[in-house]
Length: 185
Image (cartoon, rainbow, N blue to C red; front, side, top):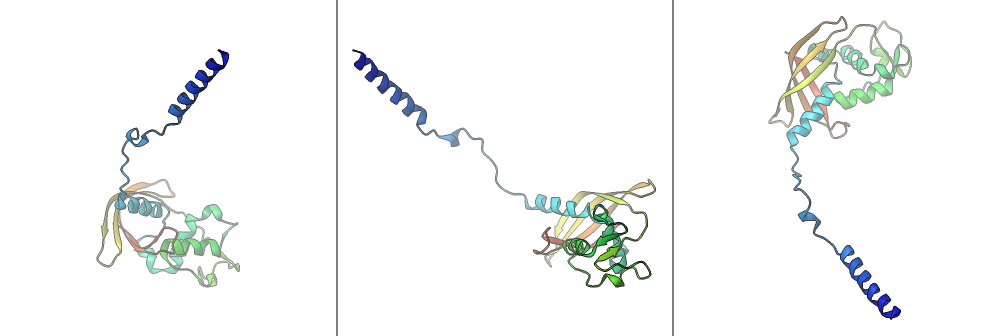
């Protein structure tokens, strides 16, 4: 009799375990997920990230000293006294604007030069906070990104402008793009 009860219990347990291990249709339980990617939102996020780390605007693009000096502002957290390592600055310049400087001794002529470093010229600077307005893909493959920008100056002034920035694809940049020009309007 004990053997029979044990056998019945064994069969019941096997049946219970079999039901517990039976595969279920999980797809019927999952909510439907939209996996479509909004490419313009991806670009918007990437471009905003770049612009909110950018300090080169309008006429600055015409002068290599202005590009370097304004780029140094973005890297103040990596400064070493009055200098930034040339390689750190070159990495930033390449990823943001698509070029590197071979000889920093020609930058900021008249200021101190230190081999392997770029001098940080003393000055005030503004902080720029961009919000997206629109993105347009141009026939040449570049993108024009219009933003509203809040500018906070070093002397506690604050004002709002529009900004038009042109981006070009650069697969070697960590961003996948470079800023060609950014103009405050």
